[in-house]
Image (tube, rainbow, N blue to C red):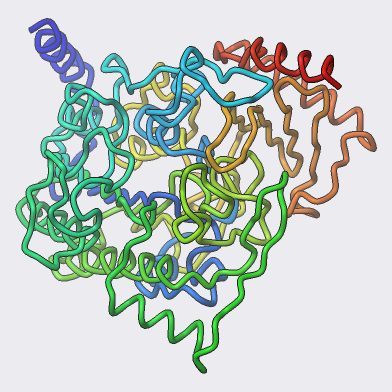
Length: 502
């Protein structure tokens, strides 16, 4: 009841604040629609338009040809939940306190033999945050969510309580882990089972198309958040066979090429047939939605954003067998999901904003997850909410082909990733990137324009730059209240005991 009263008062206040700008909209039909497509665990190199020669993504490649492709698009965290919260709120995960994927162990339950205890984190996107969906809804937009949410275990924190009129499939799980996974029965309380043989990405596209058809005469926000291409690795059999043939045209067994990262294997070649089939099916689902926009003559009035929540899974995942883990390669980027190297945080990003972007153009401006909320508000001619999207900037200048006025972007991941990554914080300023590994005096400094693979640590050669970036990083961590991991006393005691025995 308190929450309901709060929302009514909030909506009334926003209505009053919006009255002076109401004249900015000639009519509902001229206000842009928004289609935000988020793919789970899609790597920077996992699309044809980003250089993949094994995966086939004609629908997404077509989107890039009609919009703007960003080469330095980033997720605000190397794992999913923090990035998703950042997209919704316009705030860095560290400011939200939501720095780990929800379900990861809190420090009091940590049982891994590590020198640090991971930091405590907030396990939901709290309702006090004003989401981009709420902002659009408050200004007359119909709002729809389909797919993966993973921003709170209790149903009172799911999409229908965060600004979405309709929620299809969004709940506590971070993957399709129930029922038959990517096929019905789904075991998902927000997704009624379809007929035998139905495929989850196509089902989500079908639900999205149904919403667009029903709301084509008023402005809408569609947030299509695929469960693909997250494990479990399950694909349509016809597509699996397609990529088995492509990988082995003469029937021989392909041998993946591996590299070692902190004693873990890293895949360096894209050749996993099931993963390729999952990408293909996701691309077909994207095409189904884009084709519907064309069919309804909505493409010229719909802003499309396509991106991923973190880098591709390329290193061993704890508790997952080899046939289910590390299915893709992010090369030439280093490492992948769960890591603070570029492979874990740099993601594909395509934006098509009719009347703003020019077809087939490319931008190397640095973009991160906090930027989407202020960008969408500006494109919708809705007043900015700087108290909310405090960590983001509008991308409209870049969409127009210009430069962005920003100083630096930051990451804070005080956790051990299931994929092998370590706790640390990052600052990128221009072409320079510094990684501060928590609990370790060493830092790493890379010049990404010359070394996108992060192979040459320049920290000792450019101590002035390292010191300056570290000072900026420390100031930022203080300003957002970033929580740091603490020494693991049990690990220290065990190490002492081992030393004494030796």
